[in-house]
Amino acid sequence: MKSTLLAFGLLASSASAKTILVTPRLISYNIRWAVPVPGIGEPHWNDRRGKLGAQLNYETAGRPESLVCMQEVVESQLHDVTRSLGDTWTSIGVGRDDGIARGEFSPILYRPDTWNLVGNTTYWLSETPEVIGSVGWDAALPRIVTVGHFEHVKTGLPLVYMCTHFDHVGQVARREAASLLVRLAEAYAESASADSDEPTPVFLGGDLNITPDNPAFHEMIADGHFSDVRDVVDESRIHGHFKTFTGFSERAFEQNTRIDHVFVWRADVRDMNILTYGVLENRFDDGLWLSDHRPVVVDVEFAVNRTCISRS
Image 1 (cartoon, rainbow, N blue to C red):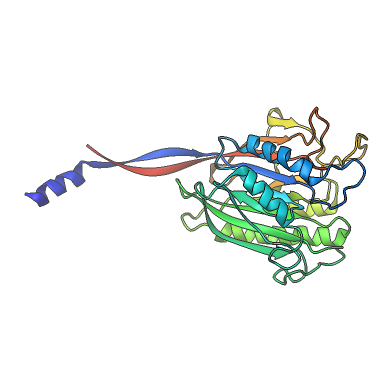
Image 2 (image 1 turned 30 degrees about the vertical axis):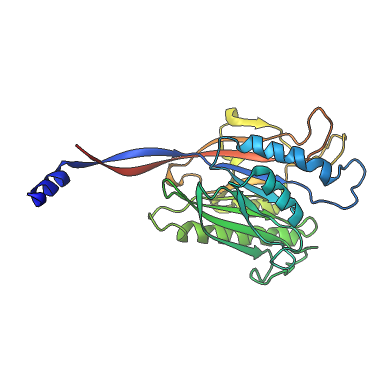
């Protein structure tokens, strides 16, 4: 009798597809490192940190799928920002000087209740990417990219976010770094997906110290793999400023200073829908500069189909 009821129960079960929307908010923000003796017009980090933390809280409130990529972050600043966001947040990344805590980080902050961390790796932007502290080509300083491979807790959607900061001096280093990141993105897109034959969505955020007319930028978008999100989103969904670097000055920059970017590797994978792109404020009417860069914010949507079992 028991086996008969079990068989009936199985026959009465049915499978249906349910679509779940996953809406990551991708942020890239150079927060300016905590200079011990700030220059003219630059506020001390102790004066900036509270308002910068409040800004990040505002930009991520109600958006647990947010991923925050930052640059010029020293260890004490990372602790400050993480503490401001609260216990639900954590980060990945290492100091670029020693692979632990010395020097600037390019961390990615995320919520582990929303994203499982499948893996993370830091590469140095040099001829020897796995050599800690290595300086590449004509760069003035060690430069890194932090790569986070995530899996959405509720749906299993895979996603890779790469966070970087190119050199401010070496043009060869910037071009070669772009080439390295293209190769890395291609490898992660093809290998990081265990649940599907479809490529994994890959995004790259960072202060690249290059404008769109720079040869290193052209290297990034060659062959149509990486695309600047600003170039693929509809104009009606672009918000805020054009320039991303302001310095700590009232002076209006005449040159193009859009040097902070969010790129997407193949914007057509997994029915991706890029919703919005924005360059937000780094200074409000109280006159306090939060950073010498503005945050770049991108909203993306994925419709993930999940099979649900129901019984009648």
